[in-house]
Image (cartoon, rainbow, N blue to C red; front, side, top):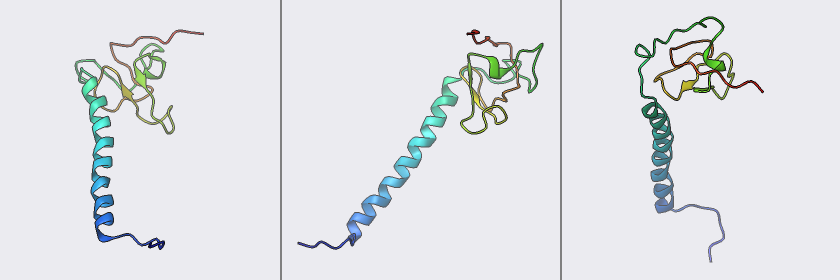
Amino acid sequence: MNDDKTISRGEMIQKLAIAPIAIGALAALRAEADAAATFDQKTASYVTHPNGGKQCSGCTLFIPAKSNPMKSAGACKLVKGKIQPNGYCKFFSAKPHH
C-alpha cells in the first residue's frame, strides 16, 4: 500500500473538473433569485430613497445583504436588480410590528 499523500494526475484532473461546477451552482442560485423577481425597477416605480417613512428595509419583500445589511444593496422578492435598504417602490408591504 502507498500511504504517502501524493495525488495522482487523474485525481487532480477530477478535482479541477468539479470546481467550475461548484462555481456555476453559485451563479445559478443568484440567477434563480433574479428570475424569481418578476418586475423591473421601472415597472415597480422603484426609487433609491424612502417615501413618507416607508423604505425597503421595512418591507416584507426585501432580502437584505449578508454583509452590512443596512447600507449594502440587497434584493427583492418581486423587483429585479440591486435594491437599496432605504429605497422604495409601489409594492411596499410593511413588516408586522412585534
